[in-house]
Length: 203
Image (cartoon, rainbow, N blue to C red; front, side):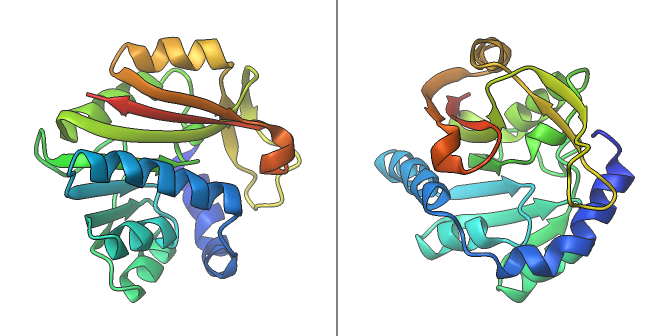
């Protein structure tokens, strides 16, 4: 990851603040879209990477999925456990699970911290722990090509981000998965400088 130690420090400091935030409507819609895919195919187990304070894992657990939340921030995992979630401190580049283990994987705005040189290794690791024909939700900001420390970041230390243009990210994920769904949520809806790429992938 950009600089794993600094990313951990940033998120440890912001854990409680992030836990208090209300989930934005467009993110609620994203969860519901993925849930409809999972229910249609009777998927049972879900791994969340970059779980933060665990709000999404809790949502999926309350909808009947057996969830496992992971994050590299100790403070975030504490908050996950307080919600009654099964949770463990873990780096998504090195997942401590057997091959073909989960029906589904959920990843919202965490893979954008991975340098472009390293993203293929991470996608390969995600693919490894996903069952055959399992579903992987990958949601990231993007729409333009960028990599580096975000100088305007209000987190300390400032975080590293990597963004892809739409066609580039499609090509990248297609090396590992089949694209089942690709939608762009415009900046106006997301409320920021970047659009959002919503991708559902199949192993």
